[in-house]
Image 1 (cartoon, helix red, strand yellow):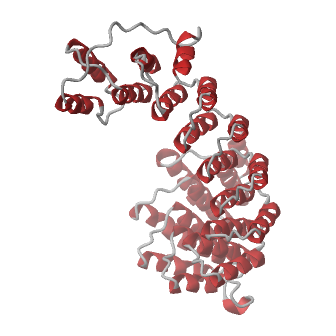
Image 2: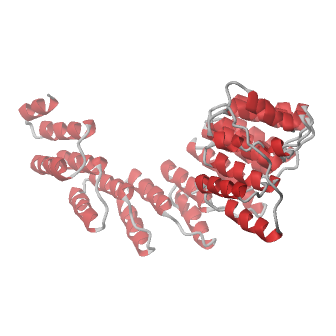
Length: 447
């Protein structure tokens, strides 16, 4: 193992170390060892200068540093991104061979200092010298590779470790799969699962769920369903995370029947749906206009899902209510939307700007501009700040009702107090002038 540090020390592109003079004398007593051990094991990663002063004091007292002390020092310096200081203490001069903990600290220092290629080389040398990198070592290096967008190198590292007889565990595979999926490298993640199969190393539900979620996020819902079927055939049962990913994705594509089937399946398997599950279905049903039981197939509507949530003691949140209000407004059921708005307040779930925008827009489309105006005026009283969408909806609503003066006044107020108007705001104001027959003013606004 000493050869690793010698190679590092002599590499021209690495760090030049100063030789330490003398080896000191052994610790005088157990009490002094404990005292200096505490001096080096402080919690702060930034107190390396203080630790360096402690080293100098020890040397003055003739106290020899041991492997434990060197490991603490190197870990401290490397965590502080002071890699040169970490190498200053040449453990091999005193005949100490660094252990896997010490080497992991050096590895962490390389990663913190953006010296990823050297970190990879260090791990290779560890394996060649007979050291078995542990899960922490692997995950540290893999994290560093993904941090520097080296996804393929992370996969190659796993392959190389397997070839050298150093088998990563499930947690390590999970870290790699998660990193690949977060960066959209879904094909590499699927390839990794196939490699695990060849090695008779079974992926668990966490790894499968991660890839399924990645496929769903990148709009490969059928591939996600195929992978789900594959894991089930292998005896790996999906959990609530797996089902939520699939249900949410299916709902986004309007495949609410398939989503409902999965909900039924998870309930039969005693997997409790969460708020995420119900919100996805409620949002999908609301957009499809499947609002009440009488208007739809049994159990395939927002009313049933909402009741099911309540029965399971799952409190609806702002997203739940916003979806319901949007559904009612979208299908011109403004009175029911207002009832839902009032209900959410009684449940201590207070509307946000999205809620107000949805209901104000619903009032305007229903021709109830005065109700919209009243709701708009209540925004500030309830601590909600109107955004550019709120103003644009209201200006458009005034325009449709031929209330040009109100539209102009609100536009001026917006420029004085509110957010800056955008293209849609100007278009709404131009239409208000045109509907009022004021072509000159609309032409001026177009400039």
